[in-house]
Image 1 (tube, rainbow, N blue to C red):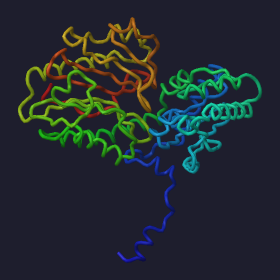
Image 2 (image 1 turned 120 degrees about the vertical axis):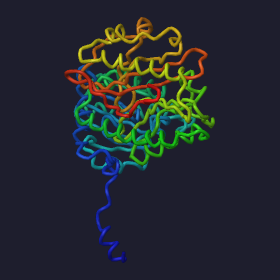
Image 3 (image 1 turned 45 degrees about the vertical axis):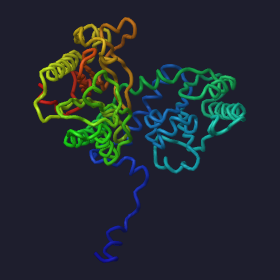
Image 4 (image 1 turned 30 degrees about the horizontal axis):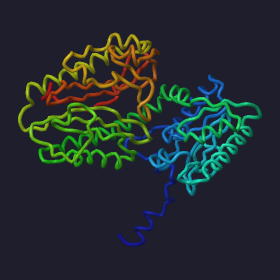
Length: 420
């Protein structure tokens, strides 16, 4: 190829940041602008139902939900408020991290971008209280400019205590933003389902690569890194947890990936917890036999119990089922495995894990709450089976959509025939 040929082939405008953000191998045909508008409008409807004049969102996942804008999500989650969104019934103002104002160019869900003021001790040092007062006064003024004079109910989340106190002292009536945000996120549009499916297909490719790389002698973190590589290559964001473990690390659950060498004939258990393309959660769990020998009778027994649990519980989910009804009908966990049970029976899933939590029957009295499973909800049904003091544990999980007439399984990665 000559230099002229190269320039002819590359003489095209550089893609915008927004185009790059939206690019993902599994995403052809998704109306992403429509998805963004739906989510913003969902939030505004929930605000109206609760007489909330404005939301101040600082959780980067919720900022992305409301606008589609992403920037340094882990950093800004830890350094708050350094990037935040003011959402009113008519306006959406993103206060962007210093020097990053260009990142939201072209987003129809953002009416204005202003530089953020980082009201944190790290940024302000001994002058933190003064910084918080100035920040709060500025926010109160902006809210009054946008929605008019008066005492305003403002939904707030994830700010340092001093910033919240300063907002109250500035005359705002503060309420928790979690309820309107979670209720908005709970019902997915068809476009959101397309995004979830794209994220799942991307993650399933990564899990297939991880499954193919599984062998005795590889470490847990080496194996786990295979999934990370696929997530990044698929324009996903990150793995939210480190839940890959092997052998004795599979029991009890919630042991993080480590430098342990995986040995022959063990089990390897994985929970993906992937924030994938478009910011949507791919959340399914699988357990694999390492080989080369056939799985042991005990390994097959606990795998089959986990398989039975999730499929029993999948079958009782449907539109109109209450959370209490689900709990009462959910699979009975055998006594030998009850104390090591997963802390939930099922949970909502969208851009991350979300409302609702569905509890086991034994836990409903202490932790459960009632509600209704509705069309448009996406849920994950969980199982962990491992006897107290046992050698092995099995983690399985399926992600599904609640439809008008039943459910649709969204996670397609196969189960292990050798364990069934």
